[in-house]
Length: 180
Image (cartoon, rainbow, N blue to C red; front, side, top):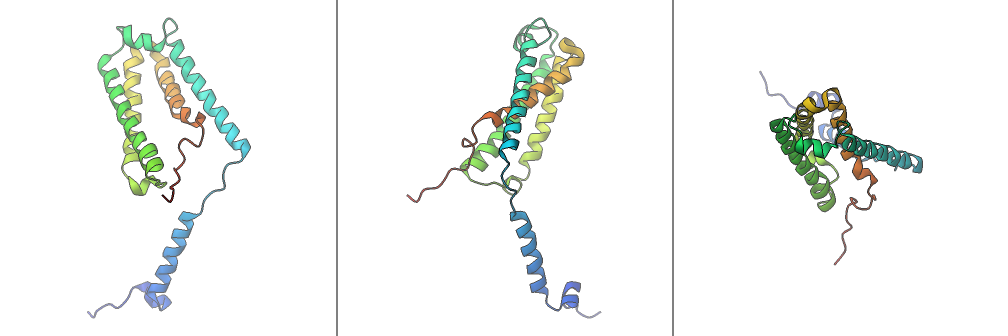
């Protein structure tokens, strides 16, 4: 067998480097296209939606089991499974650390917008730790709240996730670098 010169793309187009460079440039340009900023109506709706989730989370925490609020229930009720509760809290701390790393360190302080390139494993690990924390907290609350435990945990999680949307957008914007 003789030596193979060039790829099938070279044989078809006659020039390998030009066609490959054109493909690479078009892929890079597709990635760099940005969406237009959301309209005022979209931003207002996002704030209303976030507010409703936060209010729902507060109501779920205050309502608890109907007799005592959720913090009181977690601290004093003997029906709560303490091992599952501690595992869930530990996983929430891990999730919080991942989120601080992604949002504050990478995006805000380092100015990197593309998390997948900067930390490709951080987002899946944060997702897994958040889901496992939800399951562990549901298991911990099940004896006290029964069928409302998954709903309470989900609503409180969504309230916590949506709470940063209520902060002014300038807090997490990329800091401007001065020429000094």
